[in-house]
Structures are given as C-alpha cells and as structure tokens.
Length: 177
Image (cartoon, rainbow, N blue to C red; front, side, top):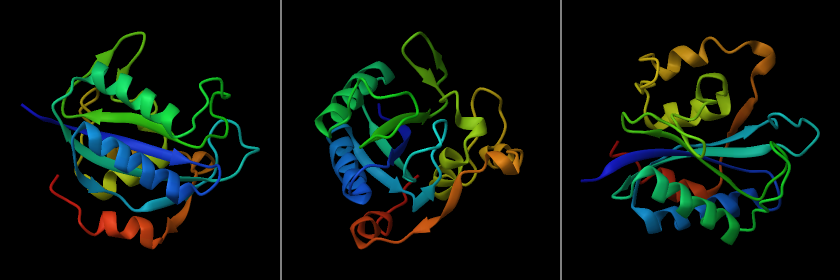
C-alpha cells in the first residue's frame, strides 16, 4: 500500500534551480512524483546573513516507511553535495524536509512528522498549499491555510514566485493529489 508524502525542498547555494531539479529526480527513485509546487524566492530563515533560498514542495507516492525515507533523503542530500557539518539554518546546496505524510504523526529523536516548523514557516506553507490547498495538519486538525494567516508579518520570508523553464516542465504535469 502506498502513502503520499509531502517534501519541502530548498537551496541557496549555486544554481538553485538545478539543485532542486536534481533533488526531484533523486526523490523519484523512492516513489512516483505526483505534484510539484511553484518555486518561491524566500529570505533565509534562522541565520539571516546568507543568500536567499528557492523553495518548493513535492508530493510523492511511496511504498517506503518514514524511517526508510529519512535514511534515503539524507543519503540523497549527501549525493547532491550537502555537508553534514553545515550550520543549522545556514547556507546549503540542498535541504529536503519531510513536511507531511498522509495522516501519520511521528515524534521520535530522529524524525518529526508533520515537521515541527510547519505551523510557523510560510516557506513551507505556501508551496504545500499550491499542491494541497485544503491540507490539514494531523497534529492539530487545523488547515494549513489557517496557520499561514496567523504568521506575524515580521516572520514572513516569501518574497515572490520564480519562473524557470527547467522547473515549469515539472509543475505543468502536476497534480494527482
């Protein structure tokens, strides 16, 4: 039986679109990509003195369990050039987060699903809402759109959407979610 998992992916070093495309191709090894959001240009979160990020969300149908997926995405991040020693919230070639997994809730020392930052990060919420406009947080039972409306103006990071032909071919073939 397959589940749908939602990833939020970001990059702020080098050719950010190329890194996101490579992450999408890598994730397709673990299941079937069924939707992709637009690209969002966002201010850096946490450590502010760094280049802007490009962020997106992908929906994937998979047979893997969450812990197998976590292991696979950590390996994929390394393959794509992510340094495990990088500063928390610092610059990175690629960052792949499991944001949601159907209606599953996981809280252990290695994994939190839904992602703990989901209710407070517009750079998670906006891309996810592109592909799942009625998404519900299984932890609280609230809609993701209600979280977005509660984020303080000073904490907003999304600047604008970005068009790029390398990504457009992915988003135009979306959505079976």
